[in-house]
Structures are given as structure tokens and as C-alpha cells.
Amino acid sequence: MTERLLIKALSGGKNTKIITLNGKKITKMPSALGKLPGLKTLALQNNLIPKVCPELCNLTQLTTLNLGNNLLEEVPEEMKYLVSLKNLHLAGNRICRFAPGACDGLQNLILLNLNNNHLTQLPQEVSRLKSLTHMSINFNQLASIPRELCFLKNLSELQLNYNQLKCIPEEIKFLKKLQKLLLARNNIGVLPKELCDLKKLRILDIAGNIIRIFPSGFQDLKLREFYCEGNPLFLQWPEIAKQQENVWSLQEITSRFVINHPAENNPFLMDAMEWYPEIRRIISQRKTCAVCGQYFITTWLECVQFVPPPKAWKISKNLQLVPVRALVCSYKCFTQRDPNLFGIARV
Image 1 (cartoon, rainbow, N blue to C red):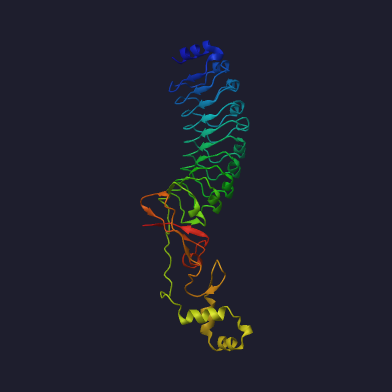
Image 2 (image 1 turned 45 degrees about the vertical axis):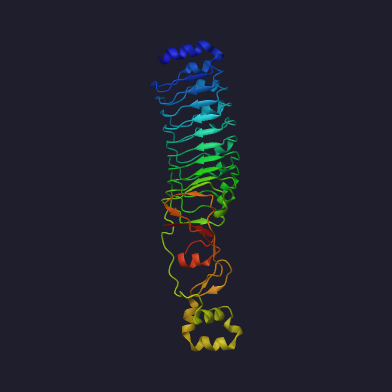
């Protein structure tokens, strides 16, 4: 059956534009394909092909190549000769590396699908995919994202679900056209503040990570869809302040005065510090507001600002935004977290 299809295709010569040989149990890519230089679409998915044939280099007019669900172990070097290629599907293989130079000629590539492979890293050469708009590398083993990927200025969709990512490079801010970012089921603990520079971002999925709080400015993103379930948001609840009253205690007022007026410039305070060791003990427990730098003992809410979530956001139904934007030292003092963050709590 496969042979008959190839013979028919070959009889068309340069006029043959599309070949589909999906699910034919092919174990070797037919070298006869090299005799079809005018081929535009080649579909060989769901076969048993372990590597491409050298003749693939002749298909310089090929725009779509589908080798999904085969036995490939690398993105082959022959790809660099496919200078017209726009769509490359390599999902469901055993790919764990890019062959040297594989990205060199793919200047017109728009879509790259590498889902369900064994990649642990991406080469710096991905930066050569200048026209790329959609990249999908779900279900791999990526531990990091190369900063070079963030220089793909035309990228509008990036899917990295189900990997082993621990962080996102701050260079993410250079993906100015990014509209869809999927990072679900990784090991990400902190989102970089540069994420907030993505003004065109509309869909963000960070479900199933270990994120507790979000960067300042996060609420300004114009998201349409936002998914964050499965994160330990506020896993450690804020500690209860010692003073619950709406007014400062006399001890708080006195302690702030003593702390903020150096004793060496005030003889009265010098005597008090000498005769009352308890004062020194209390002052030694002072904390500092991360925003204004003032000292305090128990509570400090002067710099707290609560920010409501944008009404346009579509969020997970089992979550409620509690946008506590930390211009706050109370985050640092009560939760020991970065004070320049914005948090979400589970209800």
C-alpha cells in the first residue's frame, strides 16, 4: 500500500504537493521523497521511523512536516535545509536533543510542536527561529528556559506545561507579543516581576506549581483567563500581631520614639537606657518597614495597600483573589516573604 502511494506520488513529479502516509507502520523514511522537490506537505505521523533520510534535504519548498508519534531521538540536522518550513510537528517521539545546526535554516518556521518528548534542555540556537509564533513543549523534562528563547520577538504562544521548571528568566519581558503562557504543573516558586511587562498577555496558566505570592504590578496585567489552582498560596498564614487594637499601645509609641532618636544625642534617653535594661531588650526586637525604612515593634500598617482584582479576569472557581499588594512591611514581618509581592489565598 505504501509503495503504491509513493509510486503514484512520484508519477506526479514536481506537481506532487501533498503526501500523507500516517499510520502505515513505516520503519524507514522513503528516500524516494527526495525526488519530489515541489512537495509542500509531508505527513508521516504514527509510524516507526527512527531517523529521517538524507534526501529530506531536497525538499526546500516543504512548508509542513509532521513526524509525530515516531521513534526519533533528536531534532535532526537535516531540518536546517528546509528553508520554507513553517509548521514542524515532532510530538510523541523520544527526542532528547537538537542536532548541531538543526535550527540554522528554519528562519520561516512559525509553529514548533515538541510535546511528549524527553528534552531536558533547549539549545541556545532556538534564538535563530526568528519567525516563530507558537512553541509547544509540554510533557518534557525541561529544568530551565534558556534566556535566548526570550528573544523570539514574534512569539505569541508558549506552552511549557508538565516539565520540571524551577524559575522563569527575567528576560521574559522581551516577549512583547506574548499572548498565551502556559506553565502548569512545574516546580516554579516565584514569578519574576518582569512578567508584569507583558502588556499583551491574555492567558496565563500557572496551576500546580509552588507559588505563594505574585510580583508587584501583577494586578495590572490585562488577563482574560488566569489559572492558579494547586499552588500553596498562603501556605503559612500570617502571624497574629501582638497588638490587636486600632491604636498604638503606649509601649509602641515610646519604643518608636526611643528607636528613632539616637540615645547618644539625648542625655535623658542615655540615663533611661542605663537604668532600665528592659528598654534595651524591647528595642533589640525592633523590625524595619521594607518600604519606608521606619522602625516598629509590633504592628505597622502605614504602608499597606489593598488592591482589588481586575473584574475582567477569568479565574479558577475554587480560588478567590486576595490582592494584598506589598508595598507592605507586614508581609516581611508577619510572613517573612518578599515585601514587593502580591498574594492570592485559597478559600
